[in-house]
Length: 423
Image (tube, rainbow, N blue to C red):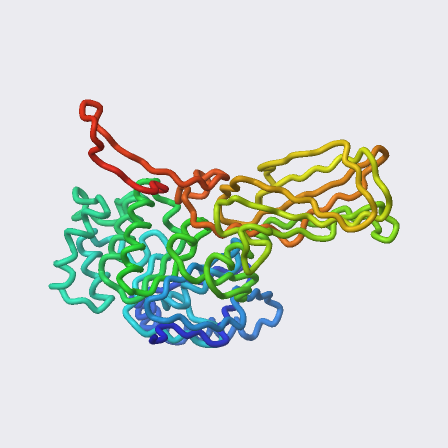
């Protein structure tokens, strides 16, 4: 498969306290004509001042992307995701290294990126198409579809500066997605739109991906990444922390995000009455005994080393999500534990959790005090397909498959049926 994007030792350094300006060609020409040496003087003064502080938004980033890949880029705010896309889109220059991009590119990095505020929506559509290298005939062929998708028919001949934020965003996405770029870069601007428009955008991006075009998609909505992307790049501190199949990379990212500061309470094993050694999933069997790729039934084993006889023991188990929200818990009293290695076996008929990272908390308490309290490691990784809402905050914690049927009350037979209606 052909490599369409190759980044080699890519780095971008910013000066702290100074905002980088992006000048249009007309601005550069005007400044050069009025004062040809101005640009050189400004650069010289910046270099001569040795007291300035800098920060690396990206450093030593290398990767390759093949034609037709749909890549999700994840990471915390300030990790360098948007900077990476801006370099690939040629919006900003790298400080070091290079990025080789082969193919016609469309980008949606900020609301209305590339639009001229004085031009009408119609004129901006044709301008954007021309920048992508399309002929007027090609643009006219797509024009009606773009306008309909953006829902700006009444305002298409109005200057873009009079558009609302939502209107500019809708038109910008419609142009970027419909003018058939070979590579599409999308930052998380979809969060600006309403839920209905987000659904349209995600559906369109899915069709773009199915059409064999390359998509780079930045989002904090992990459900969106799981649905759209086969591969994920995890950016952390300006560097690529992990690169691989989307689901395990997202699980690693969520697990890292859920870890709390400090070490959990652990007694001294040599002197402890009993302690938890390990946990694993027995059924369904998996190459990784700590990952779950089906809805159940589930058999989980916790191994306990008992050093001294214990009577009337309380044992509890709790399951938390990445936000440390308690999802399920149970407890048993009056247990009698004899010295040696014991297995605590739990059998659950189902565990319908959303994909992501989860953590067990296991404890033992006798009549006097806490015997052991273990925040189990490693985390439980749920790798089932998402069946919930596409927007994380509306997805809840359960991942329950469902069907939707739409019927007319006066007719007994179903008129429409939608399988697996997970939005």
